[in-house]
Image (cartoon, rainbow over the protein chains, first blue to last red):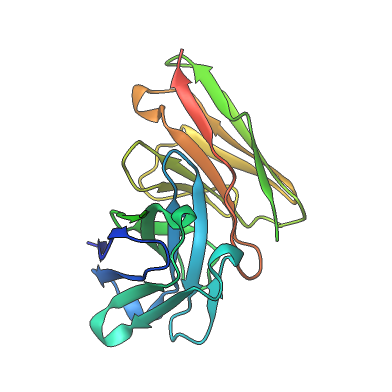
Length: 121
Length: 108
């Protein structure tokens, strides 16, 4: 069974840092592009970042570019999001999610349970 | 960046109804359009990928159509479990892969 298990959320002050983790099981993690998607309270979904299977390409949404860093460790079946210089507007539930197919054509088929990040003084 | 606009933002319907949600892209995205269902407190669920392909395990009352800039999600014979929020997402070319703002489907 494919599973994505998340950890690392919490309360942080503006300007602070936090690292989110996502551990994958039930599939060959190293073959898939994986993503972070967030959802601010009461708002819609916002794509945040993607990393290809061998970390060759990393992409970021404009609001987080230069502050967030996506990475992965295929030996540990793990995805990470290092979040620095956090702002109140980064407050959201953060989800990790897997590309449905190896070519990125099929949407996001498996999602983590989500982890809440709250940026507040 | 490609902008995605969903309509309506909210919709009221009854069990057994047929409803249609529209998603428009700000530029041609061919068929690179996906639909998700989200219930409160839960992660989104993939329903339709590449505009019209039904994800495994999703009931056949869900269908998707369209290409280019205009797409639709149709739910036939609405069931109580279908009342949720629906999002489209484009994945044309390279990221950012933007989502629509969502359509909340409520029971009339």
